[in-house]
Image (cartoon, rainbow, N blue to C red; front, top):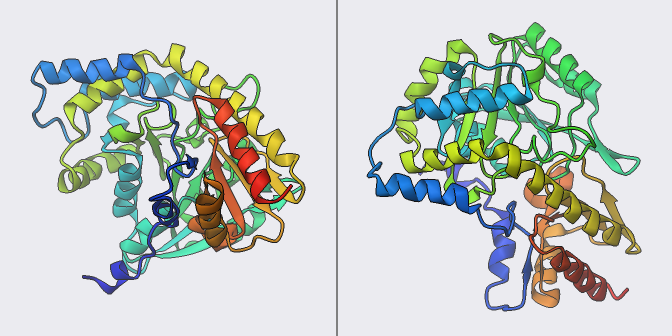
Length: 383
C-alpha cells in the first residue's frame, strides 16, 4: 500500500455514526441526505429499464438521450451548453475525482476554499498534488469569502482552484461579482477552476431558481469544469449518478478516464436520471420548498439556545453551528450520540478551519424530528 493512502484520515462522520451502534434511540442528522425516499416516478423508470433488459455497457460519456436532456436542463437555468460538452459519471464524487485526475498530479498545486467536504481536498492529495487552503470566515453571523486572500493564493503556479458553492458544510454561496473576479483572475494565471455546484438548486434566495453558477458567465473554452450530481436535488443519493460540464478540449480525455475508472454509469440508473430531469420542473421546486421549511423550522430554535452560534445558510441542506465551550467537535458529537441520542457531524470532519462547529442536516420529511432534536440538545446542555 502507498504510504500516502495509509496516512489518509478516516471519515469522522462515520466515526460518529459508528459510535451510535448499540444505541437504539438516535436521531441521525449526520449524513448529507434527506430521509425522504427517491420519488416513485424515478424508481419506476429504473425498474422498467431492468425489465427491458438494459443491463449492458453504455457509452463512456453517457446515453445520448441523457446528455441531450442534461443540455436542455442546464440551458433552462444558465447559458446553453451543448450536449457534447457533458459527461455522465457514476456519482458526483466520481465526477470530481475524474476532474482531478485530468487536471492535477504529483507536484501540482491545488487551491481549495475551505471548510469543505473532506473528499474534495483528499482527491488531489491521493493523486500526489499539494493543497493550499483558503478559509472562509464568519462575519456578522454568516460565512464569507476573503476574495483578496483567495486571489493572492491563486498564482501562475496553481493548476486548479477548487470551489464548492453552495458550500457543504457552511451554506456559503458565491455571488456573481465574486465569480466574475475569480474567473478573470484564473484566466490571467492559466488556472483551471473545478466548481462543485451540486447544491445549486438548494438555494433559498427568494425568486431565484438556483444559486449563481460559473456557467452563467464562462465561455465554452474557458478552463472550467463544473461537477453536478442527481443526489441532492432529486433525492438520489444511493443511485450514484452525476455529470460534468467540460470545455470541448477536455471531452475526449474524459471519455478515456471514465473508461479506465468505471467504463460507464449503469444504463438503468441513467434511465432514472432521464425520468428525474423530465419531472424536474414539477418536483424540484416542491422539494426546495420543503427544505426551506425545514431550515426555517430548525434555525430559529437553535438560535434561541443560549451559547449557540448559528451561521444562516444561503444554500445547501445544513445548519452549521457551535456551542460555547465545546471546542472538540468530534468528542462533543460522540457525547451527543451516546448521551443525548442526537447524531450530528463534527466540524473537524471538514478541516481544522471548522473545528468547534457541528453540522446538522435538516433535510427531513418530518420537521417535527428537527424540533425533537433541538429538545435533546437543550436537555443535554442543561438549558
